[in-house]
Image (cartoon, rainbow, N blue to C red; front, side, top):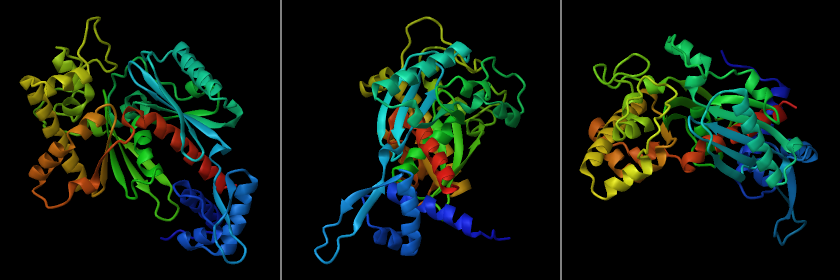
Length: 395
């Protein structure tokens, strides 16, 4: 049964449309906006006036028209407010500050092993305070903080996976936000990581996000064709079975995607580690080979590492092909491994085509992150701005 929208709902949707339309566009006139969105000029003028009064859009001068009165140009007021995104990993984290218009004001990596203690979260809060101060941003102008963490640290993950042996470092979803300097919440990392692809105008279709980090995370992102807003649902993608007789996973099953394409599967094997049952992944105190060194060795002709990487791409091609067949959506690869996958994308595409025996243009639906390792923290901040837009539309 179709949903019947009342006049307030329609105005809310139109407000979102206007903000989203201005987000990735140069300054435009109200008439141009009216034609682009197929909304009446009075509707555009009324909502634009309200948004300008609230400081979310700004007058940017006039057009160069040589006939009659020159129309005014409007755009988003990028400095209307800011959002902070944080990405937590096992051994370090990232923080990004973005403006209302999506400009990345600052981003940085901090070296801090995850403990989940109150002291840990207070140190993250202090890092945020320092970054805001360095950029001269009053915390009162921050609309919120969104923290992207592995889905495995959410209680819901363990409920969905029907697992009882939870890690000790579980996140308290209620107490952590209270330790932040501004209003805050948490989000599964894959949901955050896929958002930049939409925000910066590079994707206009539904997509499955494959977050390749120490833990493989996944989510389905759906774009509302009417308003341009994005909805997301996390999924247990890392525990999709690729080979039911394969390698044992920490979840107790065999052949999970996690055991073939996580970042850890590369580093653990080349360092002679076995962390399949160590969920948080604490490493011994010895010198380790990290991913940059692994790929440098491949380029230098290390045949053993090259075979390992070829196996990795085989498994990833299988997973991507299956997602495409199942969902008929785009696939976005994000996370620590995304920059390396991007470097070998031609080989990955070749393997996908070989599996699928299809004439479909894989490059049309397969994407890699444009922000490398910062996709999750930037995406968390951008999605926090999206949450604000929902509130703006609702008045």
